[in-house]
Length: 251
Length: 270
Image 1 (tube, chains in turn purple, yellow):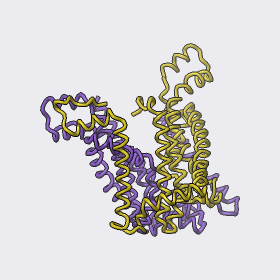
Image 2 (image 1 turned 30 degrees about the vertical axis):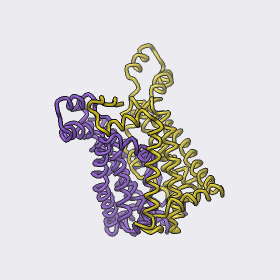
Image 3 (image 1 turned 60 degrees about the vertical axis):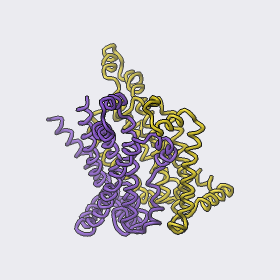
Image 4 (image 1 turned 120 degrees about the vertical axis):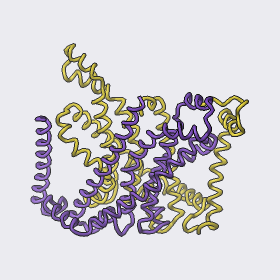
């Protein structure tokens, strides 16, 4: 308990030192490149009493809608293709190409297709999460124990029984692992899409501040993005805890 | 590897699977046919399903790619991307391993700074691009920094994991046998964490490439990402597709190279 207390004291001290150094640096240099914690805090309070929530809501909505499309579709595609070895064998070059390519970089194409509003960002998040979930589910289905399959087959299981009782549950840990990766990626995809072309959302707030060389605004938005990132990361680790619980139960 | 089913129970699709698995030329042919079919569908869809303005067409894209190749434009941009990704990778990996070692050896310092590091790690790194462009100007440096920061965190965490997971019994045994702290570091902790560092280095290659492309999309004036973004800015769909195909080619190349080196190492992961 005591060591826990001292840990928090040290952390608080470190934070205080960092903020103090930043404040001193900002006061000493007149150029304003590094702004200062005081200015950033005032700006954050300013933003929080006004437009910030609308932008946060847009970014979150893009993430949630994109995930709601991409995750179930990816799981379904992975389960289906995982049970079709012949098709999977023939499609392999395409699968490898899609697996290799960083899909977030397709943002310009989607913006070209779907315009400046939320649609291209939703599709970007959906595309990225679809493939992450697809690859993980596909790998999960491939990893299903062959002996168990043979046993079920010998016991006269039908295709649907095989699927519901063995393949789907066995792939579950892989699916959750994919979800854990997909969550932070969804935030990255939404923000990248907004940074390229948007009228609202955290990414556009960031590029607006940058375009006006408003350093205080830029740092304020970065801090909000960091908080969003931490929230998403902790949601992802909740998912991971779920997976680990699963794996322990398996043993 | 699933053994092919016995012929008594096999369906036509199982027989076809077994055939493709045993005849490499047939598999190559089948796969080529699938890829050809995709390009054919694209060619047919362009104009019929959607205007070439949105879909371009394989012919136009290949012509443009040929144009880029002979004019040398392609290699200049590919070179810029590889330079940014490579420099950032080396810088980020070196700093990441060093920081991971230092923090791994000082668990109490690590406990204090851990939340600060994970907060920085959670920030989408690409959001730093506008800041770096303002501070350092558009060009190589912001790209290198974005790549370096991305790689830094990956290597920091894999090195930390490595140091934490290296064999405790071995360390205690060495202590009992009178090893000095520096001997424990050089003879047990560093070799023990090497597998983690190597796996981090492998994973980071793809992240470095992605980060470089993303940085070019947002704030580049050269590179494959810039090629895609500037084409999109001119509503030149053909240019966008050509850039994406270049990206696909290099991504597949990296993945192939990595899986070659990775095959033996992957077994103990996950």
